[in-house]
Image 1 (cartoon, one colour):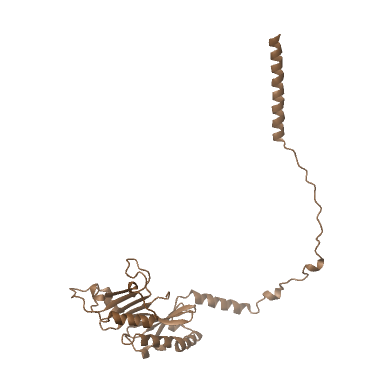
Image 2 (tube, one colour; image 1 turned 90 degrees about the horizontal axis):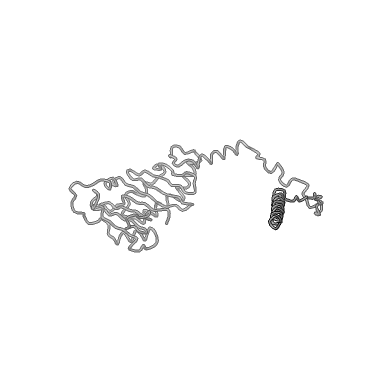
Length: 267
Protein backbone atom coordinates (compact mmCIF):
# COMPACT_ATOMS: atom_id res chain seq x y z
CA UNK A 1 0.00 0.00 0.00
CA UNK A 2 2.79 2.37 0.89
CA UNK A 3 4.57 1.43 -2.32
CA UNK A 4 1.49 2.11 -4.43
CA UNK A 5 0.93 5.46 -2.73
CA UNK A 6 4.50 6.53 -3.37
CA UNK A 7 4.17 5.60 -7.07
CA UNK A 8 0.93 7.61 -7.37
CA UNK A 9 2.55 10.66 -5.73
CA UNK A 10 5.61 10.33 -7.99
CA UNK A 11 3.38 10.15 -11.08
CA UNK A 12 1.47 13.29 -9.99
CA UNK A 13 4.77 15.15 -9.43
CA UNK A 14 5.99 14.17 -12.90
CA UNK A 15 2.79 15.41 -14.51
CA UNK A 16 3.02 18.74 -12.67
CA UNK A 17 6.67 19.11 -13.73
CA UNK A 18 5.80 18.49 -17.40
CA UNK A 19 2.97 21.02 -17.25
CA UNK A 20 5.28 23.65 -15.68
CA UNK A 21 7.98 23.12 -18.31
CA UNK A 22 5.43 23.42 -21.14
CA UNK A 23 4.08 26.64 -19.67
CA UNK A 24 7.55 28.17 -19.42
CA UNK A 25 8.47 27.22 -23.00
CA UNK A 26 5.21 28.55 -24.38
CA UNK A 27 5.86 31.92 -22.72
CA UNK A 28 9.31 32.15 -24.33
CA UNK A 29 8.03 31.34 -27.85
CA UNK A 30 5.16 33.83 -27.67
CA UNK A 31 6.28 36.99 -25.82
CA UNK A 32 3.59 39.41 -24.84
CA UNK A 33 2.73 41.91 -27.55
CA UNK A 34 2.79 45.63 -26.99
CA UNK A 35 0.15 47.62 -28.71
CA UNK A 36 1.19 51.03 -30.02
CA UNK A 37 -1.43 53.69 -30.18
CA UNK A 38 -1.09 56.15 -33.08
CA UNK A 39 -0.17 59.66 -32.03
CA UNK A 40 -1.95 62.46 -33.74
CA UNK A 41 0.42 65.05 -35.31
CA UNK A 42 0.64 68.32 -33.46
CA UNK A 43 0.44 71.60 -35.24
CA UNK A 44 3.55 73.80 -35.21
CA UNK A 45 3.45 76.54 -32.65
CA UNK A 46 5.69 78.81 -34.75
CA UNK A 47 3.88 81.68 -36.40
CA UNK A 48 3.45 81.45 -40.12
CA UNK A 49 5.41 84.64 -40.74
CA UNK A 50 8.69 83.08 -39.50
CA UNK A 51 9.00 80.80 -42.56
CA UNK A 52 10.41 82.36 -45.75
CA UNK A 53 7.91 82.62 -48.53
CA UNK A 54 10.53 83.31 -51.24
CA UNK A 55 13.66 81.43 -52.40
CA UNK A 56 16.69 83.02 -50.68
CA UNK A 57 18.90 81.81 -53.55
CA UNK A 58 17.24 82.98 -56.74
CA UNK A 59 18.30 81.27 -59.91
CA UNK A 60 19.73 84.50 -61.27
CA UNK A 61 22.44 84.48 -58.58
CA UNK A 62 23.95 81.29 -60.06
CA UNK A 63 23.82 82.32 -63.70
CA UNK A 64 27.05 82.87 -65.64
CA UNK A 65 26.56 85.64 -68.12
CA UNK A 66 29.16 84.28 -70.57
CA UNK A 67 29.59 80.52 -70.12
CA UNK A 68 31.95 80.08 -73.09
CA UNK A 69 34.37 82.72 -71.80
CA UNK A 70 34.29 81.28 -68.28
CA UNK A 71 35.09 77.78 -69.57
CA UNK A 72 37.91 79.08 -71.75
CA UNK A 73 39.44 81.02 -68.84
CA UNK A 74 39.20 77.96 -66.58
CA UNK A 75 40.83 75.76 -69.22
CA UNK A 76 43.67 78.24 -69.64
CA UNK A 77 44.32 78.28 -65.89
CA UNK A 78 44.34 74.48 -65.73
CA UNK A 79 46.65 74.21 -68.73
CA UNK A 80 49.03 76.71 -67.18
CA UNK A 81 49.15 74.78 -63.90
CA UNK A 82 49.86 71.53 -65.75
CA UNK A 83 52.98 72.95 -67.35
CA UNK A 84 56.29 72.35 -65.63
CA UNK A 85 58.56 74.08 -68.10
CA UNK A 86 57.92 76.72 -70.74
CA UNK A 87 60.51 77.75 -73.29
CA UNK A 88 60.89 81.41 -74.14
CA UNK A 89 59.86 80.69 -77.73
CA UNK A 90 56.52 79.25 -76.53
CA UNK A 91 55.48 82.31 -74.54
CA UNK A 92 52.48 84.29 -75.65
CA UNK A 93 52.73 88.02 -76.24
CA UNK A 94 51.07 88.70 -72.89
CA UNK A 95 53.36 86.26 -71.04
CA UNK A 96 56.35 87.84 -72.70
CA UNK A 97 55.28 91.30 -71.59
CA UNK A 98 54.73 90.08 -67.98
CA UNK A 99 58.18 88.45 -67.98
CA UNK A 100 59.92 91.58 -69.26
CA UNK A 101 58.22 93.63 -66.54
CA UNK A 102 59.36 91.20 -63.82
CA UNK A 103 62.84 91.02 -65.33
CA UNK A 104 63.35 94.79 -65.16
CA UNK A 105 61.71 95.30 -61.76
CA UNK A 106 62.83 92.22 -59.80
CA UNK A 107 65.14 89.79 -61.64
CA UNK A 108 67.81 92.22 -62.75
CA UNK A 109 68.17 93.93 -59.32
CA UNK A 110 68.43 90.49 -57.65
CA UNK A 111 71.20 89.42 -60.03
CA UNK A 112 73.05 92.70 -59.49
CA UNK A 113 72.91 92.28 -55.72
CA UNK A 114 74.20 88.70 -55.99
CA UNK A 115 77.06 89.76 -58.28
CA UNK A 116 78.05 92.45 -55.78
CA UNK A 117 78.14 89.88 -52.96
CA UNK A 118 80.34 87.46 -54.92
CA UNK A 119 82.42 90.10 -56.66
CA UNK A 120 85.70 88.58 -57.84
CA UNK A 121 84.22 85.07 -57.94
CA UNK A 122 81.51 85.44 -60.62
CA UNK A 123 82.17 83.62 -63.93
CA UNK A 124 80.12 86.11 -65.98
CA UNK A 125 79.50 89.83 -66.24
CA UNK A 126 76.34 91.37 -64.86
CA UNK A 127 75.77 93.04 -68.24
CA UNK A 128 75.53 89.59 -69.84
CA UNK A 129 72.21 88.85 -68.10
CA UNK A 130 69.74 90.17 -70.67
CA UNK A 131 66.28 89.23 -71.87
CA UNK A 132 67.85 87.76 -75.00
CA UNK A 133 69.74 85.23 -72.86
CA UNK A 134 66.52 84.01 -71.21
CA UNK A 135 65.96 80.30 -71.91
CA UNK A 136 62.89 78.93 -70.08
CA UNK A 137 60.58 79.22 -67.10
CA UNK A 138 59.99 76.50 -64.51
CA UNK A 139 56.46 76.26 -63.02
CA UNK A 140 55.15 79.24 -65.02
CA UNK A 141 52.28 81.10 -63.44
CA UNK A 142 52.77 79.55 -60.00
CA UNK A 143 53.44 81.25 -56.70
CA UNK A 144 56.90 79.71 -57.03
CA UNK A 145 58.54 79.93 -60.45
CA UNK A 146 62.10 80.20 -61.74
CA UNK A 147 63.89 81.59 -64.78
CA UNK A 148 66.91 80.05 -66.54
CA UNK A 149 69.46 82.10 -68.44
CA UNK A 150 72.20 80.68 -70.67
CA UNK A 151 75.29 82.91 -70.50
CA UNK A 152 78.01 81.51 -72.77
CA UNK A 153 78.65 78.26 -70.87
CA UNK A 154 77.01 79.35 -67.62
CA UNK A 155 73.51 78.24 -66.64
CA UNK A 156 72.05 80.81 -64.23
CA UNK A 157 68.80 80.29 -62.34
CA UNK A 158 66.72 82.96 -60.61
CA UNK A 159 63.80 81.95 -58.37
CA UNK A 160 60.66 83.86 -57.45
CA UNK A 161 59.32 82.38 -54.23
CA UNK A 162 56.00 84.13 -53.47
CA UNK A 163 57.45 87.47 -54.57
CA UNK A 164 60.94 87.02 -53.10
CA UNK A 165 63.41 86.96 -56.01
CA UNK A 166 66.99 85.66 -55.66
CA UNK A 167 69.72 83.74 -57.49
CA UNK A 168 69.34 80.08 -56.54
CA UNK A 169 71.40 78.16 -59.10
CA UNK A 170 74.57 78.38 -61.14
CA UNK A 171 76.39 75.77 -63.17
CA UNK A 172 79.46 76.62 -65.27
CA UNK A 173 81.08 74.41 -67.91
CA UNK A 174 84.19 73.52 -65.78
CA UNK A 175 81.81 71.58 -63.50
CA UNK A 176 82.27 68.53 -65.74
CA UNK A 177 85.67 68.04 -64.07
CA UNK A 178 83.85 67.25 -60.83
CA UNK A 179 82.52 64.05 -62.41
CA UNK A 180 85.90 62.89 -63.69
CA UNK A 181 88.55 60.93 -61.81
CA UNK A 182 92.11 62.18 -62.28
CA UNK A 183 94.69 59.99 -63.99
CA UNK A 184 97.88 59.75 -61.93
CA UNK A 185 96.65 62.61 -59.71
CA UNK A 186 99.24 64.95 -58.23
CA UNK A 187 98.96 65.99 -54.59
CA UNK A 188 96.01 68.34 -53.99
CA UNK A 189 96.92 71.97 -54.47
CA UNK A 190 96.14 74.73 -52.03
CA UNK A 191 92.45 75.71 -52.31
CA UNK A 192 91.86 78.77 -54.48
CA UNK A 193 89.60 80.42 -51.87
CA UNK A 194 90.52 80.67 -48.21
CA UNK A 195 88.26 79.69 -45.33
CA UNK A 196 88.07 83.30 -44.17
CA UNK A 197 86.89 84.42 -47.60
CA UNK A 198 84.26 81.68 -47.70
CA UNK A 199 82.90 82.70 -44.31
CA UNK A 200 82.76 86.33 -45.42
CA UNK A 201 80.84 85.44 -48.57
CA UNK A 202 78.38 83.27 -46.66
CA UNK A 203 77.62 86.03 -44.19
CA UNK A 204 77.20 88.60 -46.96
CA UNK A 205 74.86 86.26 -48.86
CA UNK A 206 72.75 84.93 -45.98
CA UNK A 207 73.00 87.81 -43.51
CA UNK A 208 73.99 85.48 -40.65
CA UNK A 209 76.89 83.46 -39.32
CA UNK A 210 76.74 79.66 -39.38
CA UNK A 211 78.32 77.60 -36.59
CA UNK A 212 81.48 75.65 -37.54
CA UNK A 213 79.70 72.28 -37.42
CA UNK A 214 77.35 73.47 -40.19
CA UNK A 215 80.12 74.33 -42.66
CA UNK A 216 82.01 71.67 -44.61
CA UNK A 217 84.99 72.77 -46.75
CA UNK A 218 86.75 70.14 -48.88
CA UNK A 219 89.44 70.47 -51.58
CA UNK A 220 88.11 69.23 -54.92
CA UNK A 221 91.49 67.74 -55.85
CA UNK A 222 91.05 64.88 -53.35
CA UNK A 223 88.47 62.96 -55.39
CA UNK A 224 88.00 64.81 -58.71
CA UNK A 225 90.07 66.03 -61.60
CA UNK A 226 89.55 69.64 -60.52
CA UNK A 227 92.75 70.23 -58.60
CA UNK A 228 92.97 73.49 -56.71
CA UNK A 229 89.24 74.04 -56.30
CA UNK A 230 87.22 73.95 -53.10
CA UNK A 231 83.77 72.54 -52.33
CA UNK A 232 81.55 74.14 -49.67
CA UNK A 233 78.36 72.74 -48.12
CA UNK A 234 76.43 74.70 -45.51
CA UNK A 235 73.61 73.43 -43.31
CA UNK A 236 72.72 71.06 -40.53
CA UNK A 237 74.54 67.71 -40.41
CA UNK A 238 76.65 68.51 -43.50
CA UNK A 239 79.38 66.16 -42.24
CA UNK A 240 77.01 63.23 -41.64
CA UNK A 241 76.89 60.24 -43.98
CA UNK A 242 73.19 60.90 -44.72
CA UNK A 243 73.06 64.68 -44.83
CA UNK A 244 69.84 66.59 -45.59
CA UNK A 245 69.67 69.11 -48.41
CA UNK A 246 72.27 71.82 -47.65
CA UNK A 247 71.17 75.42 -47.41
CA UNK A 248 74.10 76.44 -49.60
CA UNK A 249 76.26 74.41 -51.96
CA UNK A 250 79.20 76.04 -53.71
CA UNK A 251 82.23 74.93 -55.69
CA UNK A 252 85.01 77.36 -56.51
CA UNK A 253 87.31 76.44 -59.36
CA UNK A 254 91.10 76.70 -59.39
CA UNK A 255 90.78 80.31 -60.59
CA UNK A 256 88.56 81.23 -57.60
CA UNK A 257 85.42 81.68 -59.70
CA UNK A 258 82.21 79.89 -58.85
CA UNK A 259 81.68 76.71 -60.81
CA UNK A 260 78.54 75.59 -58.97
CA UNK A 261 76.13 77.46 -56.74
CA UNK A 262 72.93 76.32 -55.14
CA UNK A 263 70.69 78.02 -52.59
CA UNK A 264 67.88 76.07 -50.99
CA UNK A 265 64.44 77.66 -50.99
CA UNK A 266 63.90 76.26 -47.46
CA UNK A 267 66.10 78.65 -45.49
